[in-house]
Length: 418
Image 1 (spheres, rainbow, N blue to C red):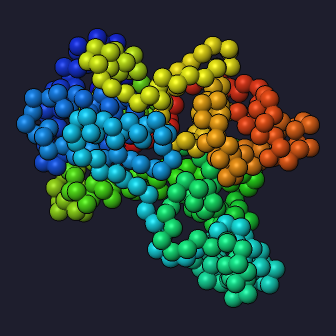
Image 2: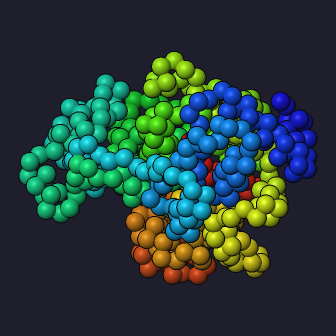
Image 3: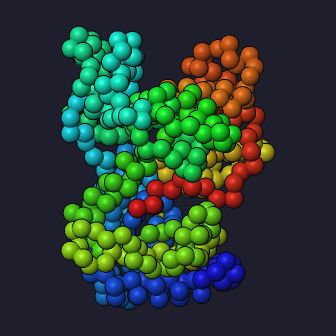
């Protein structure tokens, strides 16, 4: 398929798209023997579930539904998932974040050890020849006993068996600010600190140097997506023996998803999975050419239930009243800097959750980002971050606090990526 063909498919009427989706579902069931649906509680995956349930193929009775519970889902979505499972008489398999297997230092403690090794001339003991940190474990093992005892007394240690939550990810890696293409590094923050200070890598590229300048000041990372969503989903797929995964992804959601669809199509073979003993693993996206309008038209036509989150409203920057368009992780800020972004909406619709995310560290990193990009150089800098949480206009809404860039046509934060 090419861009012109995709455009034509997207302009087709709903009946045509339903017909294509049914054909693709039938083809998918003919390839896999253990099918599963990646379900988020969002409208797209709900419609896909309804399509599969309504499909005449006998294989639908074997469908497994996997709910990616990141533990920071909206209550409205989480409650809907379990209500729908009861109404549709289906067992839900929850994919939850894993747990740590060993005790680990919190980031503040890691920094203390790091600085101790620098001050005592021992930092090279935990560095690779190129100046990068050997590993987080190597740094933590170099912690002096007296410091470790202090960390224990100050609650600066993550005990073994700690669930790797959004809050744990924020501490160890950083917060999901800006798009996924912006923050590409998956290393823990202490490793990035070491890389920036001691790495032998050099560059004269102005864009790269500007990126490192931001990275030096802002604790930013998208690694939470892997820990909270991708790894748990793959673990459940392995446990069940899934060889076919249905996803409610649409090319209209982002450029990257459109490119993915054009190159791979509705049904494609993914990477080999060791638990399948050489058998192929398939991905299927029957709604790839649908749009949001198609989804809502289908919901209205067939009276499909949907999460009450979508009925919640907020006041947009132009003064209009808008409905929430997307569900997802409460603390996601991948669209930060755009008008009417996720955090801007969250502050109005779920103020308690917004404040919890901000006080957990997001607010400080937003302030650091604003300073790194040389915006908000004003009287705001004279006030502690916590005192600014109630400032209006809110300085944590976007990169300039007064509106940000135009709202994007599509947003990347979406829990249906599995």
